[in-house]
Image 1 (tube, each protein chain N blue to C red):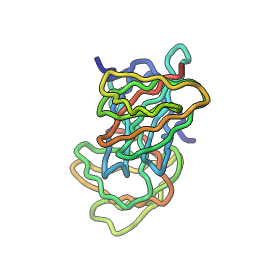
Image 2 (tube, each protein chain N blue to C red):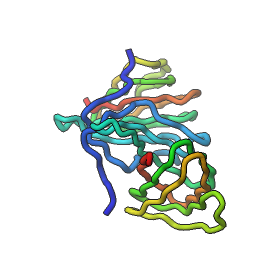
Image 3 (cartoon, helix red, strand yellow):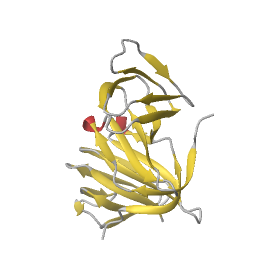
Image 4 (cartoon, rainbow over the protein chains, first blue to last red):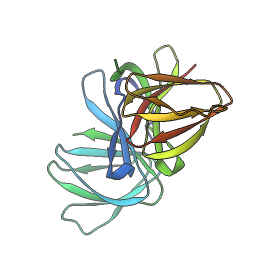
Length: 105
Length: 105
């Protein structure tokens, strides 16, 4: 099951643009104040750093990711999630656009 | 006054990607069912076609636009809007990311 839409959110209108637009997201808050974002990573290989821990949920497309300290690329597709620790980083390799929800854990 | 956030929306999680990512938007519905989108155009000169009439509202950055049948480039910055007729097109020229809300008129 993929999460196609999310109701009752307060949406920030200005986008977050990373890596010259290879990743674009829009942030929002749920009714309870929880902050999340929806975004897309376009074909590229990138390294993202985390401050807070994150859970990346795929809603369309797919990616391969490699957590810091791992040598293993794993695939994540629609409906699948992966977790990234706080103050860490991960590599992401995308060949078809990877659409995601970023949850802060 | 720019529109920094919009409350009570149902957000579609999958992005709309146009022109190889030079424009990325996320669609949503207001509580009354009105459909809109928030998006960003990265530095580029592009031509967009319209089906429904649109009102483009700038929330950050700026663009220059030229409506179909016009020879005049006009600038649109934060808090400013411009209207595009249905079944028409417009050119947009962006040198700093143009963040917008697209209202269907």
